[in-house]
Length: 175
Length: 199
Image (cartoon, rainbow over all chains, first blue to last red; front, top):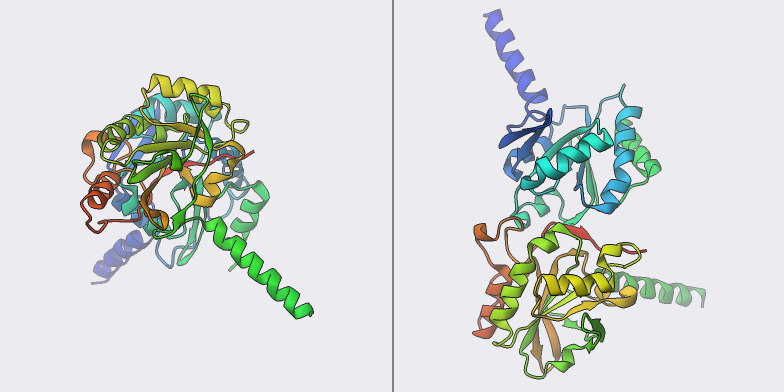
């Protein structure tokens, strides 16, 4: 009986903590030793809504390799990943590049800039169906950033400076 | 007195805020006089036979904009003769994005076989009035006695990556509805696009 309860408890813990981060990708594209999970919005959605009890702060940055203001702020996201490495902060870079450009654009970019943050690709061209679900304030312009911790969320359609991003991250870490 | 001044300042700020948001469906859109890639200036009032316009804020460098070039030519070919020409406007600052400079626009228009005017928003005065935030960003206008009324704001269709996989042709549906005197089915959509670049 005890074993049974322990088992269910484990499953429950797994559901709460792991599923939001390991949502099922549509496919994983491997190129040059780098793997890029590709999601449509339905598959991505659970990741953007972690459980209330999940105390990790997720920083989702919507970007693309050709987007000049995105590339300008990208080092700040990398730096946040490093500076908050000992805290529960996870930076996830969601590339909006075309799926057909993974091998020719996305992977070479990751290698050139030696990105350490997780990079995934959102390939769901009917953007009108999901932009509002990410945030109704979003016009669809890149870059855009969503920060989530439990049921606390903040969305910004802008290019961040390091200080702004650090301030915002700290705000999320403070209980 | 002080209170009055504060009130006026408040109203002015509120108005400025409203203007920054740009047009909504139903608003009357401003005309403009902008330089085309053939060095001639183009205004909406030049098109005396038009019933309306498909205004698209677009540019050279953005992959989403590039992906829609052929589709814009197809829209123009199909609807220009029916009274709804495409008018493309590049809202980006050429200093911020050299690839979107005037000469580059001339090259791109030639290479891509644009059948429509491709205008430069010199000084970036027009796109904020419309409220465009990205490229491509479409405004369908209908010419009426009260001016050019905004009938649709948003995306060209529902698949930026693959034109053969499009399910809903938003802009074409709007123009068809306007031509046949029907209600516009969907008058506002969102799309992913490149931000408009300022200095």
